[in-house]
Length: 69
Image (cartoon, rainbow, N blue to C red; front, side):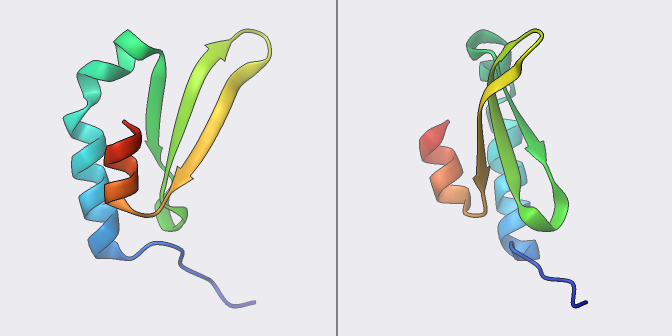
């Protein structure tokens, strides 16, 4: 089985910069952005025990991630 890549290394580096720029927002807005390797970045929103996160959005484009944050 062939290993697919869904985000380029260049775009991954850009997304990482965007995610790091908004670290202060995460605690105020109850969200977290996680690097999931070749799949891009995932924004998890509104954690409620015991159900988990209400919303999970995957990003492979840094501009879209920036606009969402």
